[in-house]
Amino acid sequence: MAALLAVDRRAELFGVAVTIADLALFSLPDHDGDEVTIYQVWDVLERDWSFKLDRDDGEAEYAIGATARFNDGSVLHIAARADCCDGSGCRHCRGY
Image (tube, rainbow, N blue to C red):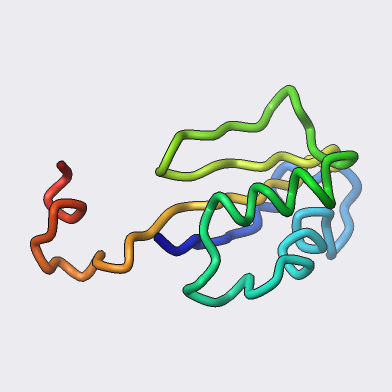
């Protein structure tokens, strides 16, 4: 499964153009490639950005994705996408 990453700046507190979520996104190796998984992304966030994560407001759902909220209010959404999500009829695409 590949990870799809998106930054949400709507709740950012300081009115800056570049948020902590933006910095975290671009610090991830292969952040725009199909090779990175949600688990690899979360490991990097825990290792390199743990001091900026808002621990009270993050969410994770096993094998589906995670929401990393940072203490400036910005959010990094990490969604899982199976390599087969092309309607091929595999077990994942059928939902079981």
